[in-house]
Image (cartoon, rainbow, N blue to C red):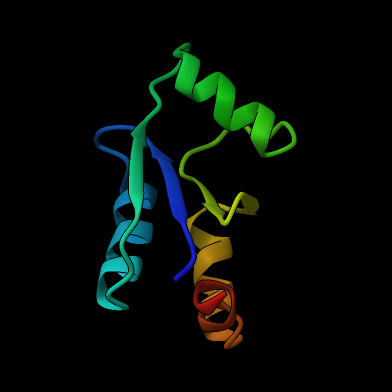
Length: 85
């Protein structure tokens, strides 16, 4: 099973949507609290190639983007392949 990491902030509907999609699929993930200005947020920005929004989602260290990107991968049938690696 792939390692999934998701950088989030409290009260973020996009973060909630991404976590809900992963939960529906039964995928375990590590949630990292990344409020504005925190070291975790700086790490997420660096790892994602400069993207400053949350959530930032990584599958086996690969930046896949945010909630919309995760949903698009799922609709295209590509998410299960990434998660099975």
